Length: 163
Image 1 (cartoon, one colour):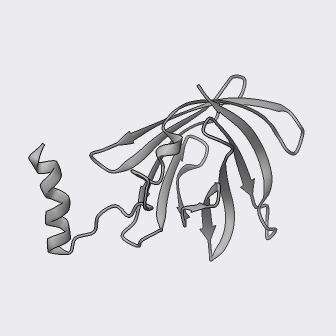
Image 2 (cartoon, helix red, strand yellow):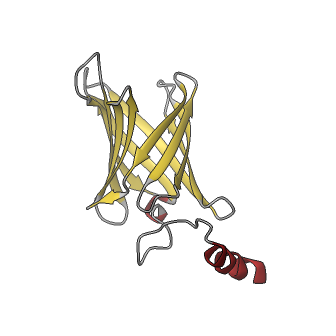
């Protein structure tokens, strides 16, 4: 227990980076911790989609691990790791799934009630996930994707409720 208290103090004294969290929050991702049940639709064809999202905070790595699992018949399953960078107010996310492998996203954190993860290639945004909180137990997750040279357009949207 003493080591937990001494490590942040030692990091500050030595000038080492520590997790950059907004004032008043234990971590920037605490809102997401728990199990979520989601329902929505694909934008292109209005087909329904359902998913579960389970998120846990890992105190040892100071990261959020998020499991996104579509409900059959859809086969998307992803593991995400969200964490802070050395730059205050700047975050990274890695998403791994069997369709696209591992992808890297960045975020500037909460902007009002939304947290957006953006992926770029050749200095152009090609994909974005936007999490918008609607009270303590409800959020929407919107996935936007770019086709060709076009700006990212909605691919699917989920409305989620914390169990």
